[in-house]
Image (cartoon, rainbow, N blue to C red; front, side, top):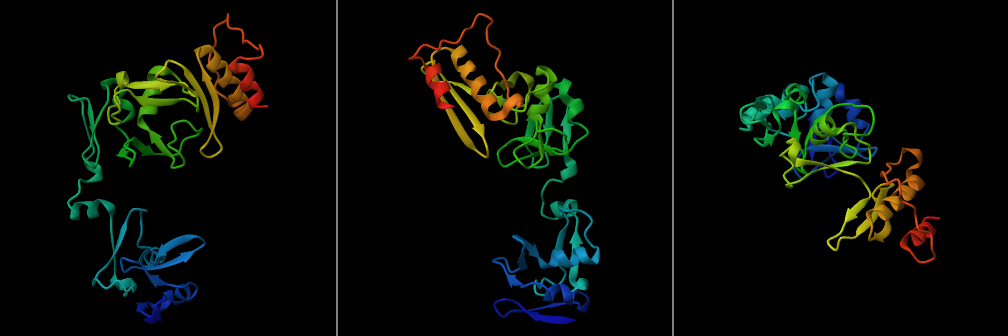
Length: 274
């Protein structure tokens, strides 16, 4: 065995086979009493690192525990790997595999007990996957997919309400969004989903505001307009300016002609984005 000192003087022990790895980094105790190390901007847990080096870990969500309860004893014989399913059973949580579909209630039950409402015709896209609820309340599944649509930010999670919306609204543009009419993100029935065209928001006074999100949460405001056609035209121009040919374009009436007289909002808007 190899005994080594932590950053604040505590003594820990590992097997001799792990000594070179231990000596290559600086180790300390975190607030929970676990031995950790910071390396290349990431924090590593010693017991997981040793379990991985020993070949004990099979899945990312496996839990590594100390057999004798001593977190300073990281010898391989003292480490036990508990699968996520078994850990959830030990802690009294509902098993991840207990996710089920109730076709009579038109509901999908998640591992945390949440009840997700969907239409019977959409069961085929959910019944062969494992779904979960995010901290924001969205129902997602993790899966690699090509393209940016369905993605929830940078997490790579597939959004259930986007999948369902594409089944009745057709292929969505990456800039389009899907909202829940009643505000309940667990209600993913088709009648509760609304496909939103980007860039135009109707205010309480009946006017329309133009906005565009770009470059990591930056927002461009294109002004407020009385007519939807003026707002749509302004959005089309600005979106092309920011996103090029990939920009979403609102469909304008065939009779619409922009007014470029000196005073209107459109003229001011065009000057703004030059």
